[in-house]
Length: 148
Image 1 (cartoon, one colour):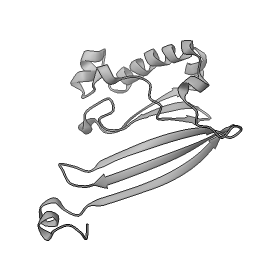
Image 2: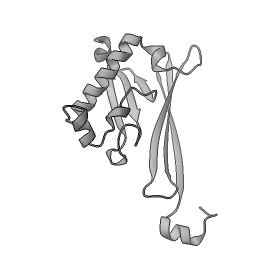
Image 3: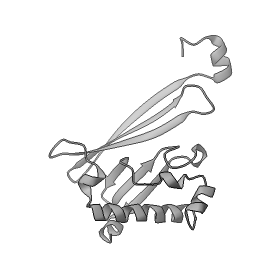
Image 4: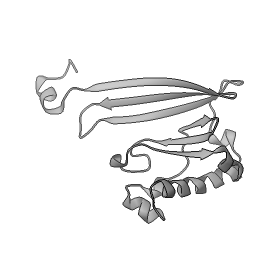
């Protein structure tokens, strides 16, 4: 920000970038959650969250395919859509679109966090909907996952 001409700060405001990290451990998994916020010009600032889950035993990053079978993943895709419809009081994709979602982009994300209660998928602004919709998270309980 100190390198910007005075005219930019007067019209755009001060630029800012910040990041935080959090670590959680569940069973044999460790998850790093990196939260960022920035304003570098434009209509609004931008924020987001990235989750990275690692095996404590092997030290490698895990994907949903490492944790769930192909059949479970298909069931989770359908459950994701049902839960979004429930959370946003929508009957179908058309109503989700009316609420700001981009139905063609709705799918499981590798941006997830495992907890003792289940799994939470995190979608940052613009991932599956407009910026005004904000960040979206969908939690699937262990019971819901066991019933897939």
